[in-house]
Image 1 (cartoon, rainbow, N blue to C red):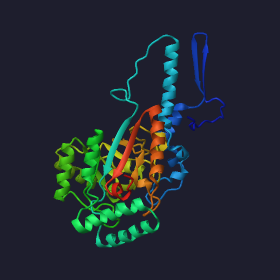
Image 2 (cartoon, rainbow, N blue to C red; image 1 turned 30 degrees about the horizontal axis):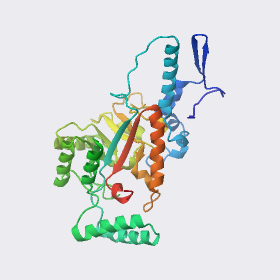
Image 3 (spheres, rainbow, N blue to C red; image 1 turned 90 degrees about the vertical axis):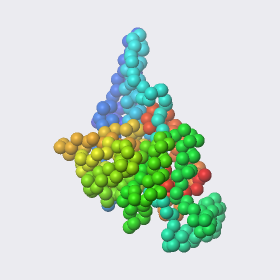
Image 4 (tube, helix red, strand yellow; image 1 turned 180 degrees about the horizontal axis):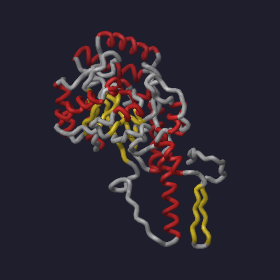
Length: 365
């Protein structure tokens, strides 16, 4: 697979491998370490580029955005590894290498659930969704029509809340033998209608206890406004820790509404050990070709990053064209297939984010 490399000179052969008798010769004609560093630190974001109201770098300004299904960083490290292995083999020597995973698996799968909303309808939303369902019918989108119609019918007659989909999540976990990470919030965002519950809800506390008992990890979901106050995040972490009686290791900012560079500088005193937000803002893929957990570069020399960044390669929040239209199942499947094919060649983490609202609102199943 072709990948982009940066160099001061144009090389017809980025790397050379030759044998002279029994002697192996390998040469890399570009700065491999600098190319890896370029991705890990998002170097171009420090130099130029348009930024949105949240201070995030525009995806379309990213040089590597067109290669979003490429595992570029792992590809480059594996290139160096191949040189070493071939050199050792040709000279009839041995080398010991530690595997990426305990049983030398081809890659790791990470499933996480963003529990953003648990109440699909207020009176206003109910009227809007009835109109939306009629639009689905007129547009001949029968799958979407019947899915929403069924949810509306069950809610009106039996008060069954569709966003409370934990039973479906638990059944899927059991079916495929998964231990997922569930991100729960403690600060409702009424203004943007992004989070509609807190940890005072007894039903929420009960389901957290059930999920933890099943072996799932519980982490914190926060609103972008909370990121300005590390002490407030620590307060939420402490509250959730008391419920699960276990140290909460990390958090996720809802809908990726955060400038990760500023987050690192302001959160040196946070108790969290990871942040699960490393992804493109508008599209699925491997941001900067990174497929493994990593500790990011911080421009502020006085800051030592403690948190790890966990890449998200596929998020259902990026399946929407607008508030009412989303990509087809076939298109979503093609995205996942490309990511999987790319990853299985060079290893890494294939990470899925599935939210409680989109699990219902995008009726692929």
